[in-house]
Amino acid sequence: MGARDVILDAAATVMAERGLANVTTRQIAQAAGFTEAALYKHFANKADLLVAVMRERSPGFSQLARALDGRAGTGTLVDNLTAVARAAIAFYGEGFPMLASMFADPATLAAHKEELRQQGAGPHKANEAVAAYLRAEQELGRLRAEADVRAAAGLLLGACFQYAFLSHMSPSGDRDDGEAAASFARTLLQELAS
Image 1 (cartoon, rainbow, N blue to C red):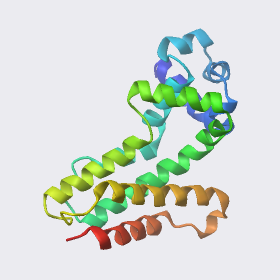
Image 2 (image 1 turned 135 degrees about the vertical axis):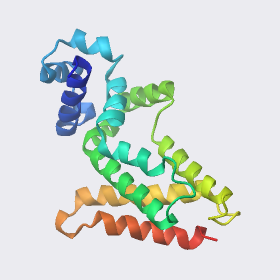
Image 3 (image 1 turned 180 degrees about the vertical axis):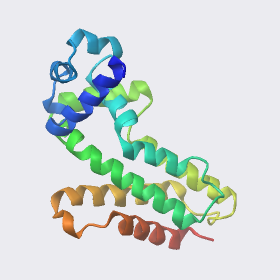
Image 4 (image 1 turned 60 degrees about the vertical axis):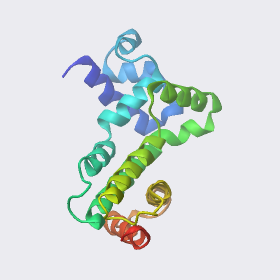
């Protein structure tokens, strides 16, 4: 395993434990067993490191990309959207502990937003990807031509986001991510399907 991978693993662990705003690059480097200078050989700043952690160490991010990749016109719409919803719930659920503290620090939030903008990344990319998938299904005639796919993507991901948020606030015993994802998909398709 190379230094970059060791740093990413350490960053994922430390950020999940302490939250993004409460962790320093020095703490991450120390957890990885490197100097802070070594960290900066691989990442421009803490925001750059966070984006890499989300892309490369978040199972939910990978699942979301796989759930959308090449799915248009294959399988059933409900199965495809359920896979998207399950992945989104996992992604948002994993991200909350890491990202929540960032919103308490306006300077960290502003820096992070600027870094995402410069990288062409950000939370809106999930909405764009789901809307693109829905648009492809629409072009194949599997969704109503007049359906607003952008709004539908927002509704699906918004439901997943809220569900993931609420799961952090309630006992885990009454939670069924799979059923929630399927329910969100079925409900959305009642409005979208031809």
